[in-house]
Image 1 (cartoon, one colour):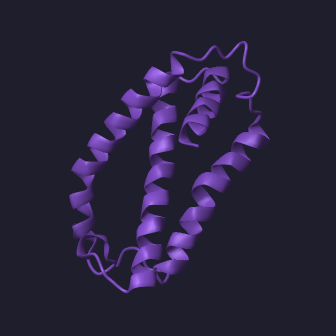
Image 2 (tube, rainbow, N blue to C red; image 1 turned 90 degrees about the horizontal axis):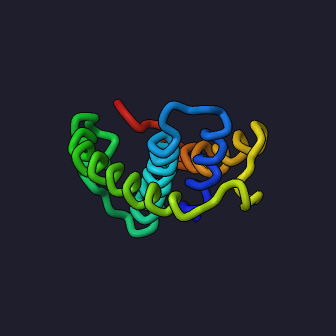
Length: 128
C-alpha cells in the first residue's frame, strides 16, 4: 500500500517539478505511516484499556521522546522507497499518473481522515 502511495506521490511531485521529489514523497509516506501507527495505538488502547505514558495527552514534553525514533524511521522510509523508485519506469506505467483532484483525494483519504479519527478517539485533546 505504501509503495503505491509513494510512487504516486513521487510521480505527481516530479510532474510539478519539485526540488527533491524523492524526499518529499518519503515525507508524505512517513506522515501517513505515523498517522496510521498512532491511530492503531489509540484503537488498541481503547479496546484493551491501557495507557502508554509517552503517547498520553497529559504532557506534551513526553511526545519529544518520539523525535529520535521519527528521524530514524524517516531515514529508513527514504532509503527503502528511493531504492524501489529507481526500478520503476514512470513513462511506461500510466497507473501512477495523478491530477490535482486525485492527489487531493489521496491525501485526504490517507492522512486527514485517519487524523480526524485520532482526534475523536483521543477525546479531542492531543496536547494540553
